[in-house]
Image 1 (tube, rainbow, N blue to C red):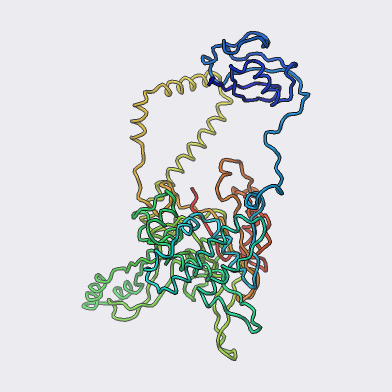
Image 2: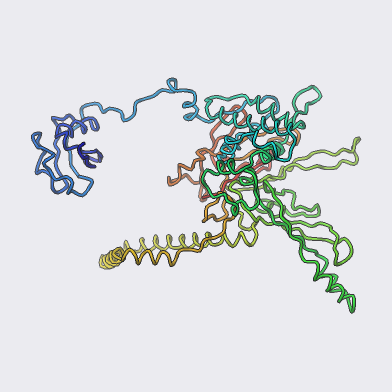
Length: 573
Protein backbone atom coordinates (compact mmCIF):
# COMPACT_ATOMS: atom_id res chain seq x y z
CA UNK A 1 0.00 0.00 0.00
CA UNK A 2 1.55 3.28 -1.14
CA UNK A 3 2.03 6.23 1.19
CA UNK A 4 -0.23 9.25 0.72
CA UNK A 5 0.86 12.82 1.37
CA UNK A 6 -1.29 15.72 2.49
CA UNK A 7 -1.22 18.35 -0.24
CA UNK A 8 -2.67 21.87 -0.55
CA UNK A 9 -3.43 23.04 -4.08
CA UNK A 10 -3.93 26.79 -4.48
CA UNK A 11 -6.51 27.56 -7.20
CA UNK A 12 -7.44 31.22 -7.44
CA UNK A 13 -8.80 32.25 -4.06
CA UNK A 14 -9.53 28.66 -3.08
CA UNK A 15 -7.25 26.23 -1.27
CA UNK A 16 -8.00 22.56 -1.95
CA UNK A 17 -6.66 19.86 0.37
CA UNK A 18 -6.11 16.40 -1.13
CA UNK A 19 -4.23 13.22 -0.31
CA UNK A 20 -1.55 12.81 -3.00
CA UNK A 21 -0.97 9.19 -4.04
CA UNK A 22 2.31 9.00 -6.07
CA UNK A 23 1.46 5.51 -7.37
CA UNK A 24 -1.64 6.91 -9.12
CA UNK A 25 0.57 9.10 -11.28
CA UNK A 26 -0.13 12.53 -12.75
CA UNK A 27 -3.42 11.34 -14.24
CA UNK A 28 -4.68 10.33 -10.80
CA UNK A 29 -3.75 13.74 -9.36
CA UNK A 30 -5.48 15.60 -12.19
CA UNK A 31 -8.53 13.35 -12.06
CA UNK A 32 -9.10 14.15 -8.39
CA UNK A 33 -8.60 17.88 -8.98
CA UNK A 34 -11.07 17.75 -11.88
CA UNK A 35 -13.76 16.20 -9.66
CA UNK A 36 -13.11 18.81 -6.95
CA UNK A 37 -12.91 21.93 -9.12
CA UNK A 38 -14.56 21.23 -12.48
CA UNK A 39 -11.37 22.17 -14.38
CA UNK A 40 -10.81 19.74 -17.31
CA UNK A 41 -7.60 17.71 -17.05
CA UNK A 42 -6.32 18.90 -20.42
CA UNK A 43 -6.69 22.55 -19.36
CA UNK A 44 -4.85 22.20 -16.05
CA UNK A 45 -1.49 23.80 -15.43
CA UNK A 46 0.02 22.59 -12.14
CA UNK A 47 3.18 24.21 -10.79
CA UNK A 48 5.16 23.52 -7.61
CA UNK A 49 5.36 25.81 -4.59
CA UNK A 50 7.25 23.52 -2.19
CA UNK A 51 10.95 22.89 -2.77
CA UNK A 52 11.95 19.41 -3.91
CA UNK A 53 9.24 19.01 -6.55
CA UNK A 54 9.51 19.31 -10.34
CA UNK A 55 10.39 22.52 -12.17
CA UNK A 56 7.96 24.49 -14.27
CA UNK A 57 4.59 23.07 -15.38
CA UNK A 58 3.83 19.47 -14.40
CA UNK A 59 4.14 17.10 -17.37
CA UNK A 60 1.97 14.04 -17.82
CA UNK A 61 5.06 11.88 -18.32
CA UNK A 62 6.54 12.65 -14.87
CA UNK A 63 6.84 9.69 -12.50
CA UNK A 64 5.68 11.04 -9.11
CA UNK A 65 7.21 8.06 -7.29
CA UNK A 66 10.66 9.31 -8.32
CA UNK A 67 10.21 12.44 -6.19
CA UNK A 68 11.44 12.43 -2.59
CA UNK A 69 8.09 13.55 -1.15
CA UNK A 70 8.86 12.26 2.35
CA UNK A 71 11.57 14.88 2.69
CA UNK A 72 9.20 17.78 2.03
CA UNK A 73 7.65 19.53 5.03
CA UNK A 74 3.90 18.81 4.98
CA UNK A 75 1.60 19.88 3.60
CA UNK A 76 3.00 19.82 0.06
CA UNK A 77 2.15 23.08 -1.69
CA UNK A 78 1.09 23.32 -5.37
CA UNK A 79 -0.43 25.97 -7.64
CA UNK A 80 -3.06 25.18 -10.27
CA UNK A 81 -4.33 27.37 -13.12
CA UNK A 82 -7.35 26.73 -15.32
CA UNK A 83 -11.02 27.62 -15.76
CA UNK A 84 -13.80 25.37 -14.56
CA UNK A 85 -16.16 24.23 -17.31
CA UNK A 86 -17.36 20.91 -15.94
CA UNK A 87 -20.00 20.34 -13.21
CA UNK A 88 -18.60 19.55 -9.79
CA UNK A 89 -19.83 16.43 -8.04
CA UNK A 90 -21.66 17.22 -4.78
CA UNK A 91 -19.70 16.39 -1.65
CA UNK A 92 -22.81 14.86 -0.08
CA UNK A 93 -25.69 13.23 -1.87
CA UNK A 94 -29.00 15.07 -1.54
CA UNK A 95 -31.41 13.23 0.75
CA UNK A 96 -35.09 14.14 1.07
CA UNK A 97 -37.02 13.98 4.34
CA UNK A 98 -39.54 11.66 2.71
CA UNK A 99 -36.79 9.07 2.23
CA UNK A 100 -35.72 9.05 5.89
CA UNK A 101 -37.01 6.94 8.76
CA UNK A 102 -39.15 8.69 11.39
CA UNK A 103 -36.28 8.56 13.92
CA UNK A 104 -33.95 10.34 11.48
CA UNK A 105 -36.60 12.94 10.64
CA UNK A 106 -37.15 13.64 14.36
CA UNK A 107 -33.44 14.40 14.75
CA UNK A 108 -33.53 16.99 11.97
CA UNK A 109 -36.79 18.87 12.57
CA UNK A 110 -38.00 20.79 15.61
CA UNK A 111 -38.59 18.68 18.75
CA UNK A 112 -42.02 17.11 19.19
CA UNK A 113 -44.76 18.28 21.51
CA UNK A 114 -47.27 16.51 23.78
CA UNK A 115 -51.00 16.66 23.20
CA UNK A 116 -53.22 18.03 25.97
CA UNK A 117 -55.54 15.33 27.30
CA UNK A 118 -57.59 17.72 29.42
CA UNK A 119 -55.75 20.12 31.72
CA UNK A 120 -52.51 18.12 31.42
CA UNK A 121 -50.37 21.13 30.46
CA UNK A 122 -48.77 20.95 33.93
CA UNK A 123 -47.44 17.49 33.06
CA UNK A 124 -46.48 18.32 29.47
CA UNK A 125 -44.39 21.37 30.43
CA UNK A 126 -42.42 19.64 33.21
CA UNK A 127 -41.83 16.53 31.06
CA UNK A 128 -40.29 18.61 28.26
CA UNK A 129 -37.87 20.20 30.76
CA UNK A 130 -36.87 16.88 32.38
CA UNK A 131 -36.42 15.31 28.94
CA UNK A 132 -33.14 17.16 28.28
CA UNK A 133 -31.41 16.07 31.52
CA UNK A 134 -29.08 13.19 30.52
CA UNK A 135 -28.27 12.15 34.11
CA UNK A 136 -31.95 11.47 34.81
CA UNK A 137 -32.47 9.62 31.54
CA UNK A 138 -29.40 7.42 32.03
CA UNK A 139 -30.55 6.55 35.54
CA UNK A 140 -34.02 5.60 34.26
CA UNK A 141 -32.55 3.42 31.50
CA UNK A 142 -30.67 1.33 34.07
CA UNK A 143 -33.54 1.11 36.54
CA UNK A 144 -34.80 -2.39 37.39
CA UNK A 145 -37.89 -2.42 39.64
CA UNK A 146 -37.22 -5.93 41.00
CA UNK A 147 -33.96 -4.76 42.55
CA UNK A 148 -35.57 -1.94 44.51
CA UNK A 149 -38.43 -3.57 46.45
CA UNK A 150 -36.63 -3.09 49.76
CA UNK A 151 -36.64 0.69 49.69
CA UNK A 152 -38.83 1.12 52.73
CA UNK A 153 -42.17 1.34 50.87
CA UNK A 154 -44.91 -1.22 50.36
CA UNK A 155 -45.10 -3.45 47.30
CA UNK A 156 -48.10 -1.64 45.79
CA UNK A 157 -46.38 1.73 46.04
CA UNK A 158 -43.24 0.31 44.45
CA UNK A 159 -45.33 -1.07 41.60
CA UNK A 160 -47.01 2.29 41.03
CA UNK A 161 -43.66 4.11 41.07
CA UNK A 162 -42.14 1.58 38.68
CA UNK A 163 -45.02 2.05 36.25
CA UNK A 164 -44.64 5.83 36.48
CA UNK A 165 -40.88 5.83 35.83
CA UNK A 166 -41.16 3.38 32.95
CA UNK A 167 -43.90 5.54 31.41
CA UNK A 168 -41.72 8.63 31.79
CA UNK A 169 -38.75 6.97 30.10
CA UNK A 170 -41.00 5.63 27.33
CA UNK A 171 -42.37 9.14 26.76
CA UNK A 172 -38.83 10.51 26.44
CA UNK A 173 -37.92 7.83 23.89
CA UNK A 174 -41.08 8.33 21.84
CA UNK A 175 -40.54 12.10 21.74
CA UNK A 176 -37.01 11.51 20.44
CA UNK A 177 -38.15 9.25 17.61
CA UNK A 178 -41.37 10.98 16.56
CA UNK A 179 -41.36 13.94 14.12
CA UNK A 180 -44.84 15.00 15.28
CA UNK A 181 -46.67 15.47 18.58
CA UNK A 182 -47.46 12.37 20.65
CA UNK A 183 -50.05 11.51 23.29
CA UNK A 184 -48.80 11.15 26.91
CA UNK A 185 -51.74 8.89 27.76
CA UNK A 186 -49.70 6.23 29.58
CA UNK A 187 -47.77 8.83 31.59
CA UNK A 188 -50.96 10.65 32.58
CA UNK A 189 -52.59 7.38 33.66
CA UNK A 190 -49.52 6.30 35.66
CA UNK A 191 -49.35 9.74 37.32
CA UNK A 192 -52.96 9.59 38.47
CA UNK A 193 -52.50 6.05 39.79
CA UNK A 194 -49.32 6.95 41.71
CA UNK A 195 -50.71 10.29 42.98
CA UNK A 196 -54.52 10.06 43.39
CA UNK A 197 -54.77 13.78 44.26
CA UNK A 198 -53.92 14.54 40.61
CA UNK A 199 -56.93 12.54 39.43
CA UNK A 200 -59.41 15.10 40.80
CA UNK A 201 -62.28 16.11 38.55
CA UNK A 202 -64.59 19.13 38.38
CA UNK A 203 -68.36 19.34 38.80
CA UNK A 204 -68.90 18.22 35.19
CA UNK A 205 -66.37 15.42 35.46
CA UNK A 206 -63.60 17.24 33.62
CA UNK A 207 -59.98 16.82 34.86
CA UNK A 208 -58.92 19.64 37.17
CA UNK A 209 -55.80 21.72 36.62
CA UNK A 210 -52.87 20.62 38.80
CA UNK A 211 -49.79 22.43 40.06
CA UNK A 212 -46.69 21.93 37.88
CA UNK A 213 -44.39 22.20 40.90
CA UNK A 214 -46.40 19.56 42.76
CA UNK A 215 -46.02 17.21 39.79
CA UNK A 216 -42.28 17.93 39.61
CA UNK A 217 -41.76 17.28 43.33
CA UNK A 218 -43.97 14.17 43.28
CA UNK A 219 -42.25 12.52 40.35
CA UNK A 220 -38.80 13.28 41.81
CA UNK A 221 -39.92 11.88 45.14
CA UNK A 222 -41.06 8.66 43.48
CA UNK A 223 -37.81 8.41 41.51
CA UNK A 224 -35.77 9.00 44.68
CA UNK A 225 -37.25 5.90 46.32
CA UNK A 226 -36.50 3.74 43.28
CA UNK A 227 -33.28 4.94 41.61
CA UNK A 228 -30.84 3.54 44.16
CA UNK A 229 -27.75 1.36 44.08
CA UNK A 230 -24.21 1.70 42.74
CA UNK A 231 -25.09 0.45 39.26
CA UNK A 232 -27.79 3.06 38.70
CA UNK A 233 -25.68 5.84 40.25
CA UNK A 234 -22.67 5.07 38.07
CA UNK A 235 -24.84 4.87 34.96
CA UNK A 236 -26.42 8.24 35.74
CA UNK A 237 -23.07 9.99 36.02
CA UNK A 238 -21.43 7.96 33.19
CA UNK A 239 -17.82 8.29 34.30
CA UNK A 240 -18.08 11.59 36.20
CA UNK A 241 -16.91 11.80 39.80
CA UNK A 242 -19.64 10.53 42.12
CA UNK A 243 -17.77 8.88 44.98
CA UNK A 244 -18.72 9.01 48.63
CA UNK A 245 -16.93 12.32 49.13
CA UNK A 246 -18.72 13.93 46.19
CA UNK A 247 -22.15 12.51 47.08
CA UNK A 248 -21.84 13.72 50.69
CA UNK A 249 -24.90 11.85 51.94
CA UNK A 250 -26.86 11.43 48.69
CA UNK A 251 -28.02 7.81 48.38
CA UNK A 252 -30.08 7.95 45.17
CA UNK A 253 -29.84 9.44 41.69
CA UNK A 254 -32.37 12.21 42.33
CA UNK A 255 -30.62 13.57 45.42
CA UNK A 256 -27.27 13.34 43.63
CA UNK A 257 -28.53 15.15 40.51
CA UNK A 258 -30.96 17.70 42.01
CA UNK A 259 -30.33 17.62 45.76
CA UNK A 260 -28.89 20.47 47.82
CA UNK A 261 -27.51 19.72 51.25
CA UNK A 262 -28.59 22.71 53.33
CA UNK A 263 -26.84 23.84 56.50
CA UNK A 264 -29.33 25.58 58.83
CA UNK A 265 -28.16 27.62 61.82
CA UNK A 266 -30.50 28.93 64.55
CA UNK A 267 -29.28 31.74 66.84
CA UNK A 268 -31.24 33.27 69.70
CA UNK A 269 -31.80 37.02 69.22
CA UNK A 270 -32.62 37.79 72.87
CA UNK A 271 -29.59 36.42 74.69
CA UNK A 272 -27.54 39.56 74.20
CA UNK A 273 -30.41 41.78 75.37
CA UNK A 274 -31.06 39.63 78.44
CA UNK A 275 -27.40 39.73 79.48
CA UNK A 276 -27.23 43.49 79.00
CA UNK A 277 -30.28 44.26 81.18
CA UNK A 278 -29.45 41.82 83.99
CA UNK A 279 -27.46 42.93 87.09
CA UNK A 280 -25.59 41.21 89.91
CA UNK A 281 -26.26 37.50 90.37
CA UNK A 282 -28.85 37.56 87.56
CA UNK A 283 -26.18 38.69 85.12
CA UNK A 284 -23.82 35.90 86.22
CA UNK A 285 -26.61 33.33 85.81
CA UNK A 286 -27.52 34.68 82.36
CA UNK A 287 -23.89 34.61 81.24
CA UNK A 288 -23.57 31.03 82.44
CA UNK A 289 -26.73 29.97 80.60
CA UNK A 290 -25.61 31.74 77.43
CA UNK A 291 -22.40 29.72 77.39
CA UNK A 292 -24.25 26.41 77.34
CA UNK A 293 -26.61 27.35 74.52
CA UNK A 294 -24.57 27.79 71.34
CA UNK A 295 -26.19 28.24 67.93
CA UNK A 296 -28.04 25.14 66.75
CA UNK A 297 -26.78 23.76 63.40
CA UNK A 298 -28.65 21.06 61.49
CA UNK A 299 -28.50 19.64 57.95
CA UNK A 300 -31.38 18.93 55.63
CA UNK A 301 -31.89 17.93 51.98
CA UNK A 302 -33.75 20.11 49.49
CA UNK A 303 -34.44 19.38 45.81
CA UNK A 304 -35.00 22.99 44.84
CA UNK A 305 -34.43 26.56 45.96
CA UNK A 306 -37.36 28.92 46.50
CA UNK A 307 -37.47 32.51 45.33
CA UNK A 308 -39.69 34.28 47.85
CA UNK A 309 -41.56 36.99 45.96
CA UNK A 310 -43.67 38.41 48.79
CA UNK A 311 -40.66 39.73 50.68
CA UNK A 312 -39.24 37.28 53.21
CA UNK A 313 -40.08 34.09 55.05
CA UNK A 314 -41.86 35.94 57.85
CA UNK A 315 -45.18 37.71 57.28
CA UNK A 316 -43.98 40.98 58.85
CA UNK A 317 -41.38 41.61 56.16
CA UNK A 318 -42.18 44.24 53.54
CA UNK A 319 -39.03 43.95 51.44
CA UNK A 320 -39.61 44.61 47.74
CA UNK A 321 -38.23 41.70 45.67
CA UNK A 322 -37.24 42.55 42.09
CA UNK A 323 -34.55 39.95 41.30
CA UNK A 324 -34.26 36.19 41.72
CA UNK A 325 -31.12 36.52 43.90
CA UNK A 326 -32.97 38.74 46.38
CA UNK A 327 -35.86 36.30 46.62
CA UNK A 328 -33.59 33.28 47.17
CA UNK A 329 -31.58 35.10 49.85
CA UNK A 330 -34.75 36.04 51.74
CA UNK A 331 -36.09 32.49 51.56
CA UNK A 332 -32.90 31.27 53.24
CA UNK A 333 -33.32 33.58 56.25
CA UNK A 334 -36.14 34.39 58.64
CA UNK A 335 -37.41 34.65 62.20
CA UNK A 336 -39.14 32.04 64.36
CA UNK A 337 -40.21 31.50 67.96
CA UNK A 338 -38.46 28.70 69.81
CA UNK A 339 -37.84 27.67 73.41
CA UNK A 340 -34.56 28.93 74.88
CA UNK A 341 -32.94 26.84 77.61
CA UNK A 342 -30.83 29.81 78.68
CA UNK A 343 -33.82 32.15 79.15
CA UNK A 344 -36.23 29.47 80.30
CA UNK A 345 -38.97 30.63 77.92
CA UNK A 346 -39.84 31.01 74.26
CA UNK A 347 -37.68 33.53 72.45
CA UNK A 348 -37.12 34.96 68.99
CA UNK A 349 -34.55 33.10 66.89
CA UNK A 350 -32.91 33.90 63.55
CA UNK A 351 -32.87 31.13 60.95
CA UNK A 352 -30.09 31.15 58.34
CA UNK A 353 -29.57 28.51 55.64
CA UNK A 354 -26.49 27.93 53.47
CA UNK A 355 -25.75 25.39 50.73
CA UNK A 356 -23.29 22.74 51.97
CA UNK A 357 -23.38 20.59 48.81
CA UNK A 358 -24.09 21.73 45.24
CA UNK A 359 -25.87 19.63 42.59
CA UNK A 360 -25.13 19.43 38.85
CA UNK A 361 -28.72 20.57 38.20
CA UNK A 362 -30.48 23.27 40.21
CA UNK A 363 -34.20 24.09 40.18
CA UNK A 364 -35.63 27.37 41.48
CA UNK A 365 -39.32 27.75 42.26
CA UNK A 366 -40.84 31.23 42.19
CA UNK A 367 -43.32 31.66 45.04
CA UNK A 368 -46.13 32.76 42.73
CA UNK A 369 -48.99 31.08 44.61
CA UNK A 370 -50.05 31.52 48.23
CA UNK A 371 -53.07 30.83 50.43
CA UNK A 372 -55.11 33.82 51.61
CA UNK A 373 -57.56 33.45 54.44
CA UNK A 374 -61.11 34.76 53.90
CA UNK A 375 -62.72 35.05 57.37
CA UNK A 376 -65.60 37.14 56.00
CA UNK A 377 -66.59 34.57 53.35
CA UNK A 378 -69.46 32.16 53.79
CA UNK A 379 -67.34 29.02 54.09
CA UNK A 380 -64.26 30.69 55.67
CA UNK A 381 -62.09 28.28 53.70
CA UNK A 382 -59.74 30.83 52.12
CA UNK A 383 -58.61 31.21 48.54
CA UNK A 384 -55.46 30.43 46.55
CA UNK A 385 -53.97 33.59 45.04
CA UNK A 386 -51.21 34.40 42.57
CA UNK A 387 -48.46 37.02 42.87
CA UNK A 388 -48.14 38.85 39.53
CA UNK A 389 -45.20 41.16 40.32
CA UNK A 390 -42.12 40.99 38.05
CA UNK A 391 -38.98 39.22 39.29
CA UNK A 392 -36.04 39.43 36.87
CA UNK A 393 -33.44 36.74 36.18
CA UNK A 394 -30.52 36.23 33.78
CA UNK A 395 -29.21 33.36 31.70
CA UNK A 396 -26.48 32.65 34.28
CA UNK A 397 -26.99 32.52 38.05
CA UNK A 398 -24.19 32.80 40.62
CA UNK A 399 -24.87 30.83 43.83
CA UNK A 400 -21.61 31.76 45.60
CA UNK A 401 -23.29 34.02 48.18
CA UNK A 402 -25.80 31.28 49.09
CA UNK A 403 -23.09 28.73 49.99
CA UNK A 404 -21.53 27.80 53.31
CA UNK A 405 -18.08 29.06 54.22
CA UNK A 406 -16.55 25.66 53.45
CA UNK A 407 -18.02 25.57 49.95
CA UNK A 408 -17.14 29.23 49.37
CA UNK A 409 -13.52 28.50 50.19
CA UNK A 410 -13.37 25.83 47.47
CA UNK A 411 -15.19 27.94 44.87
CA UNK A 412 -12.99 30.97 45.58
CA UNK A 413 -9.88 29.14 44.39
CA UNK A 414 -11.31 28.62 40.89
CA UNK A 415 -12.88 32.09 40.82
CA UNK A 416 -9.58 33.76 41.72
CA UNK A 417 -7.75 31.68 39.12
CA UNK A 418 -10.24 32.69 36.44
CA UNK A 419 -9.92 36.36 37.47
CA UNK A 420 -6.13 36.19 37.12
CA UNK A 421 -6.38 34.53 33.71
CA UNK A 422 -8.87 37.15 32.58
CA UNK A 423 -6.58 39.95 33.73
CA UNK A 424 -3.65 38.37 31.86
CA UNK A 425 -5.77 38.00 28.73
CA UNK A 426 -6.81 41.64 28.81
CA UNK A 427 -3.25 42.75 29.51
CA UNK A 428 -1.90 40.72 26.57
CA UNK A 429 -4.59 42.10 24.32
CA UNK A 430 -3.74 45.67 25.29
CA UNK A 431 -0.04 44.92 24.88
CA UNK A 432 -0.67 43.52 21.42
CA UNK A 433 -2.50 46.68 20.41
CA UNK A 434 0.37 48.81 21.66
CA UNK A 435 2.92 46.71 19.80
CA UNK A 436 1.30 47.60 16.49
CA UNK A 437 2.53 51.14 16.97
CA UNK A 438 6.02 50.30 18.28
CA UNK A 439 9.21 50.09 16.29
CA UNK A 440 10.19 46.87 14.50
CA UNK A 441 13.25 46.63 16.72
CA UNK A 442 11.06 46.17 19.78
CA UNK A 443 9.13 43.41 18.02
CA UNK A 444 12.34 41.64 17.11
CA UNK A 445 13.46 41.79 20.74
CA UNK A 446 10.18 40.22 21.89
CA UNK A 447 10.45 37.51 19.24
CA UNK A 448 13.98 36.74 20.35
CA UNK A 449 12.88 36.43 23.98
CA UNK A 450 10.02 34.16 22.96
CA UNK A 451 12.39 31.94 20.98
CA UNK A 452 14.73 31.63 23.96
CA UNK A 453 11.82 30.69 26.18
CA UNK A 454 10.78 27.95 23.76
CA UNK A 455 14.28 26.47 23.95
CA UNK A 456 14.02 25.90 27.70
CA UNK A 457 14.76 22.40 28.83
CA UNK A 458 11.65 20.20 28.98
CA UNK A 459 12.48 18.98 32.46
CA UNK A 460 12.78 22.56 33.72
CA UNK A 461 9.38 23.39 32.23
CA UNK A 462 7.84 20.39 33.95
CA UNK A 463 9.41 21.36 37.26
CA UNK A 464 8.08 24.89 36.96
CA UNK A 465 4.61 23.60 36.10
CA UNK A 466 4.60 21.37 39.17
CA UNK A 467 5.73 24.24 41.39
CA UNK A 468 2.77 26.40 40.39
CA UNK A 469 0.20 23.59 40.20
CA UNK A 470 -2.74 24.52 42.44
CA UNK A 471 -3.58 22.43 45.48
CA UNK A 472 -6.29 19.83 44.90
CA UNK A 473 -9.55 21.12 46.36
CA UNK A 474 -12.22 18.94 47.99
CA UNK A 475 -15.36 18.35 45.87
CA UNK A 476 -18.41 20.55 46.37
CA UNK A 477 -20.85 18.13 44.73
CA UNK A 478 -21.17 15.10 42.43
CA UNK A 479 -20.51 15.51 38.73
CA UNK A 480 -19.03 18.99 39.15
CA UNK A 481 -15.63 19.90 37.63
CA UNK A 482 -12.68 20.64 39.91
CA UNK A 483 -12.60 24.24 38.63
CA UNK A 484 -16.33 24.88 39.23
CA UNK A 485 -16.99 28.52 40.13
CA UNK A 486 -20.58 28.28 41.37
CA UNK A 487 -22.17 29.45 38.10
CA UNK A 488 -25.31 27.83 36.69
CA UNK A 489 -26.77 28.42 33.21
CA UNK A 490 -30.50 28.48 32.56
CA UNK A 491 -31.63 25.75 30.15
CA UNK A 492 -35.36 25.26 30.79
CA UNK A 493 -38.34 27.16 32.24
CA UNK A 494 -41.90 26.24 33.18
CA UNK A 495 -44.24 29.24 32.99
CA UNK A 496 -47.81 29.90 34.11
CA UNK A 497 -50.22 32.24 32.36
CA UNK A 498 -53.41 33.54 33.92
CA UNK A 499 -54.58 35.14 37.15
CA UNK A 500 -56.37 32.03 38.44
CA UNK A 501 -54.02 29.93 40.58
CA UNK A 502 -56.20 26.83 40.13
CA UNK A 503 -56.50 27.36 36.38
CA UNK A 504 -54.46 29.13 33.75
CA UNK A 505 -52.05 27.45 31.37
CA UNK A 506 -48.53 25.99 31.77
CA UNK A 507 -45.90 25.97 29.03
CA UNK A 508 -42.35 24.65 28.78
CA UNK A 509 -39.39 26.59 27.35
CA UNK A 510 -36.23 24.58 26.60
CA UNK A 511 -32.86 25.75 25.32
CA UNK A 512 -31.86 24.28 21.96
CA UNK A 513 -28.65 22.33 21.45
CA UNK A 514 -28.16 21.14 25.02
CA UNK A 515 -25.02 19.25 23.97
CA UNK A 516 -22.99 22.50 24.03
CA UNK A 517 -21.74 21.72 20.51
CA UNK A 518 -21.90 25.42 19.71
CA UNK A 519 -19.14 26.16 22.17
CA UNK A 520 -16.36 28.09 20.49
CA UNK A 521 -18.59 29.75 17.92
CA UNK A 522 -19.27 33.46 18.06
CA UNK A 523 -22.71 33.91 19.59
CA UNK A 524 -25.24 36.64 19.06
CA UNK A 525 -25.57 39.05 21.99
CA UNK A 526 -28.70 40.69 23.39
CA UNK A 527 -28.38 44.38 22.59
CA UNK A 528 -25.39 45.94 24.32
CA UNK A 529 -25.24 43.27 27.03
CA UNK A 530 -22.94 40.26 27.40
CA UNK A 531 -25.96 37.90 27.49
CA UNK A 532 -25.85 35.22 24.77
CA UNK A 533 -28.99 35.28 22.60
CA UNK A 534 -29.20 31.52 22.07
CA UNK A 535 -31.91 29.47 20.39
CA UNK A 536 -34.78 28.08 22.47
CA UNK A 537 -38.02 26.18 21.85
CA UNK A 538 -41.37 26.92 23.48
CA UNK A 539 -43.66 23.92 24.04
CA UNK A 540 -47.32 24.90 24.10
CA UNK A 541 -48.55 21.32 24.49
CA UNK A 542 -48.49 19.91 20.92
CA UNK A 543 -47.40 23.20 19.31
CA UNK A 544 -43.63 23.85 19.23
CA UNK A 545 -42.14 27.19 18.16
CA UNK A 546 -38.60 28.61 18.11
CA UNK A 547 -37.64 31.57 20.27
CA UNK A 548 -34.55 33.32 21.67
CA UNK A 549 -32.98 33.99 25.05
CA UNK A 550 -34.28 37.56 24.94
CA UNK A 551 -37.81 36.09 24.86
CA UNK A 552 -36.99 33.93 27.90
CA UNK A 553 -35.81 36.91 29.95
CA UNK A 554 -39.19 38.57 29.36
CA UNK A 555 -40.88 35.81 31.38
CA UNK A 556 -40.26 37.71 34.62
CA UNK A 557 -43.94 38.50 35.21
CA UNK A 558 -45.69 41.77 35.86
CA UNK A 559 -48.73 41.28 33.60
CA UNK A 560 -50.97 38.74 31.97
CA UNK A 561 -48.12 37.26 29.88
CA UNK A 562 -46.44 33.94 30.70
CA UNK A 563 -44.30 34.24 33.84
CA UNK A 564 -41.61 31.91 35.16
CA UNK A 565 -42.66 29.42 37.81
CA UNK A 566 -39.85 26.81 37.69
CA UNK A 567 -36.38 27.67 36.42
CA UNK A 568 -34.03 24.77 35.56
CA UNK A 569 -30.28 25.44 35.74
CA UNK A 570 -27.24 23.25 35.03
CA UNK A 571 -23.67 23.69 36.23
CA UNK A 572 -21.72 25.91 33.85
CA UNK A 573 -18.52 24.11 32.85
